[in-house]
Image (cartoon, rainbow, N blue to C red; front, side, top):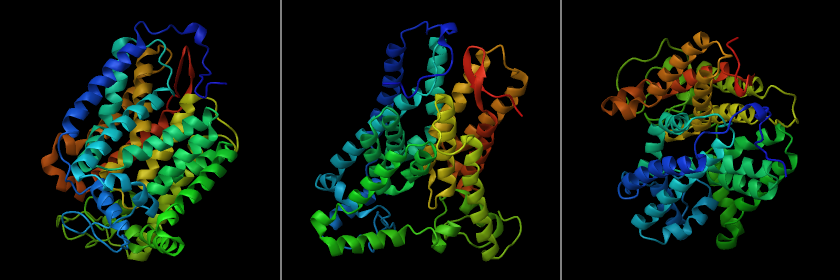
Length: 442
């Protein structure tokens, strides 16, 4: 079977690594996962994050309550946005004391993070890397998303799992295991919808069979609660879930229901509608000028559409044609996942973990650019500085957390993502010398 990540580069002219790659990989990842395990498997189990909410929602599902009319968390103010199926699947966790359930969930997230890195690494040609360059590649890539990794573990979120199912599903599909890969993606979709972005990507890349299987598995998973709840109750809860995540709800259009929501809609809303802030927002001016809500809504929809249409720039081929260049694959997939965090409503900080593939792509390219004598370093240097700026702003709350209220107020994470999007768009994959590199600045 053909390797789905085989590189088109002529490897005859590329030297093998001058170190034991598997050994260094195990040591490097072992240290990183070990540190995360020590910090997060022993502490912080009672945060009002997804797992805390979903744990209690699952318990109440089995008590036949309408989990979409209940509120959860210590403040009893957080609604449940997951599917009825997710609440059902979490039943085994809900039967455990919360401490043990949270410990198990965070342990699974360590595995999802580790496996996600292994899958990401398959897209890159590491031949010719020195030991130090490889360690730099791993640590810099993970450091670039260190803040959102922290948020996910700190709050017991599901985003690490959601990115994993996308990467694993696409990898399995490209490896010829269409049913397995499709089922994994469907499990993510039925959990929190966001992995649905893999579906149009699979269709565009001519994986029709897999796309149809994703739809089929999603429908099967959607009605799985019928086994326990019966047909009528299951349909009722599905309708309630659909209402809660409806993107045309005003709450989801302007996207400012809480002060820690980020994304394109929340940024645009705060730039043009004064007084739209929630009760916890700082009373500091951030709007440029005033527009009515109808106009702002049109701008939000236009902005989202522009980002979605921008996918064509990254795909760069006619529809229904498979892409064989692994670096091109991760470049286009990295963009799709990046804009997912910008386009979807109700995106808290932890959701921007979806930038992990795009930032890994950029780190890899800057390392290889530095190695190559065929590239105009003076041009790429400025994009490297812009990249560093974007990463620093992205992780600003981890670096200087005392000012987080100001970062949330002015949506600094959204600005950083837009900066990194521009850098990603300028570093296009192509072949230079002995390495798969990025294109020169146009």
